[in-house]
Image 1 (cartoon, rainbow, N blue to C red):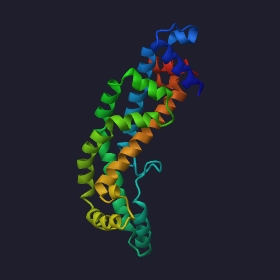
Image 2 (cartoon, rainbow, N blue to C red):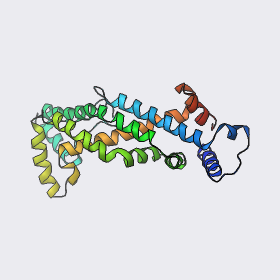
Image 3 (cartoon, rainbow, N blue to C red):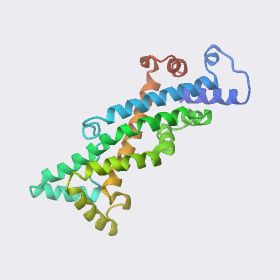
Image 4 (cartoon, rainbow, N blue to C red):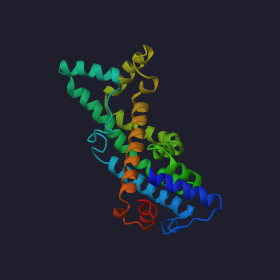
Length: 229
């Protein structure tokens, strides 16, 4: 909280043209603060894509592993009890593999969104809540990334014969209000969950950088975040 308050005060002062005194404040200008945020987010985004865009990046990580939607998960339990667990596992694996395969599509767009970040964007992230990074990336990239992810997810899920059956069952369930409309199509469901997982991991990576900027080996990150400790 102190780091946020200090940086907010600094950004407010420099934006208003007021003199900023003190050894620590002298190290930080509004430009430095924005550059530090950009560096942290770019590093965090690239790291998140690397973690998720590999085998078991989603499937092996309980934080982002994509399950069947609630109502269908209940149905899957019944299938398992009837000896059909392997088929359910195939679908869940295919869903998560599709998310993993879509991740390389995200890197360039995420990095470009960071490079085009304004000082105002940086201020919102520094002074915002714990989900400020998620909100930034979601606002800038969710829609275009969804467009990029969907064809990759579609190709991956079409390899599993259960995918079309999922859509048929989920469509009926959605009509009864048992499944959200956006979850009634497996391709759209996986795409949405893949994006949720990506933004979650970016936020976690950014928090690591804030907590231990020295470990990054980046001069600007040490200057900005290290001076706020």
